[in-house]
Length: 334
Image (cartoon, rainbow, N blue to C red; front, top):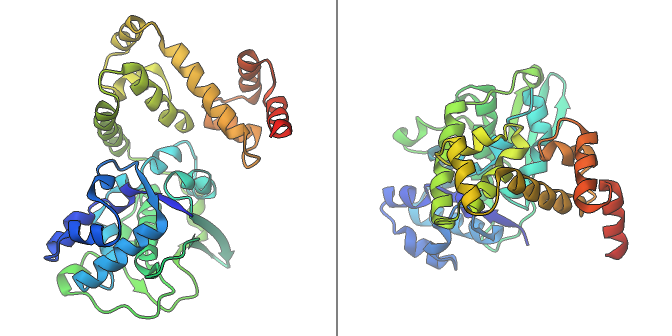
């Protein structure tokens, strides 16, 4: 059973209310509760989110509900995905590695790239079954993917047309349609087209948007780990490591502290930034090594290492084994 972040449905209540319906009633009808949506990093079954969107589309009489919801959202709905591809140099590199992180958003989603002449077909697939169907969830997911691609290309999302396999889509009202991209239905895939030469474009990252993302996450940490600076620091390190931008200065800024103040307060808690960094790296390294999906090179990059040799040396210091030895021993015992 696939799971998905409830943050993927950001702005749901707002959109439903604008159509004169009760979002809480719809959430309850789908077998969910509003409390599950308070923390965007709570996970629910993908089939439940699909059901929620289908009920909302019927109640609101909006066949394009999923697309309209995605159009209201910011990149915040994608959680850490925009940040995790920040170190990619080109758009093509960012898209190639997006599946490495997509499980953090939804374990049932995958993206595939295929070249057809001078164009690239980017297809979204959802491995989900739902008694009400997954039309609206596909709409929302494809529109979110288009918004992500537009962000790394630094273009308006309305310039990217959406292609959907669903057969019909009733016209929107004029006010709604003005904010929507071109939508083609009855297509052979769910996704978007890009010109192939765009893959070599520089991967654009809006630093202000990333700073806002960390500020919002800081508020989340304050609520989740009140008065626990070590836990807040650990969480932020884990989020920053894959971006290649993890430093005590960056972590302190995200926690709204001066680096020196962060060091002193961690010392008062009988720990240090270096100790927390090591613990996070070792914990994540062991997690990634349990899966054959990640190469040692990939893991080193995920942990913010520029050189595999440095990662291997550190890991052996922590565990007494090289990464490959630890992986072999784990699978042998398993």
